[in-house]
Length: 429
Image (cartoon, rainbow, N blue to C red; front, side, top):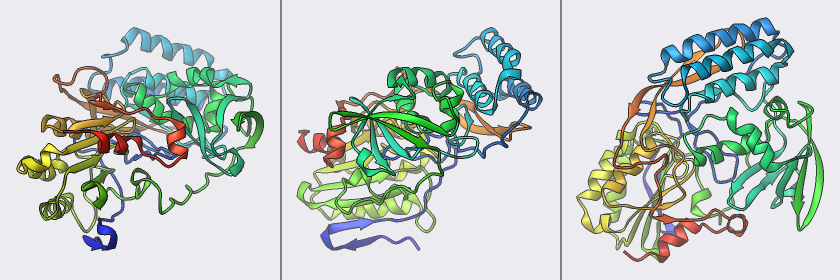
């Protein structure tokens, strides 16, 4: 049962299971975490394929994709021309006989990504057999680093190459296969693609679908580490003293009172009502708490919110607007995993006077959304596609830009710092 509680250390928490449906500009549930495990930004999770499909089976999927995606998408040629798309389909068709499953799946993903819409994607698992290399990675401003690993001596290391390919070349090979609105969403998607055996084999980075060698710099020394594909490991436990941003990602929303900063911190991870306590009730309880405390900063953290129903935030937004003293101290943290309806919420909050802090958003302010899916007939891979366009002309460009930009550096992560919250503490309104 979800309850609103006030406990020692002035912490009040709402706990509920996460989940997200795309009602407004909706996405899949993805609430990518700061650990680099990061999940999706609303493109779904797929069910995998049977290994060993022949060319005829993949060709049937190719034809279904080529017919259905343009027919269903609200505006399939807003980014790519139909002629270019059809030429790419013909090229894949001409080479299918020579492709294995990994190359065929990547070829289809590349076709879908040509649409240029972060909501429209081939919803693939980590690999055809749901395997990954035993690393968790994150793309910081200063490189790709290991944030967790089966071999703990690798944690903190910087990845410089995979199977002899420089990491920048690996990223360049993966980029055309990843549906993304902008550079931020691409960063959010890269960590799991960089450990996906079939994807790495499908872009000819890894020679094998079962083993790859990662060159990792640890303590100034380069190590070549041969890794076997394995079943995913559970995420590491979150330390009790971890920064607030890394805590409780399993909940769609929660909050706490930081007495030292006179700050309400509210992490909004999915635009969905939690079982047992709808967001409207959560918002009312949060505002009632704020009314009785000397709040100087009211922080809403949208960094890990992949979307859902953007209208759920209205009771909180209206309550903040009705409380000018709270609204004057309103900060919203955004980042690469702020996507879809969470982007729309960030816009609503910015229009209400919030100061945006962090990285550029992972979703476009004006974007295609309202996602539906269809399933390919032979592989049973799902394809997500957009059915509506959301226009926000007062926020031009392909991302929401923060008023206070915060670099994402590996040193801050491994030292347990949250530079976004530090920037808010330092800001004067």
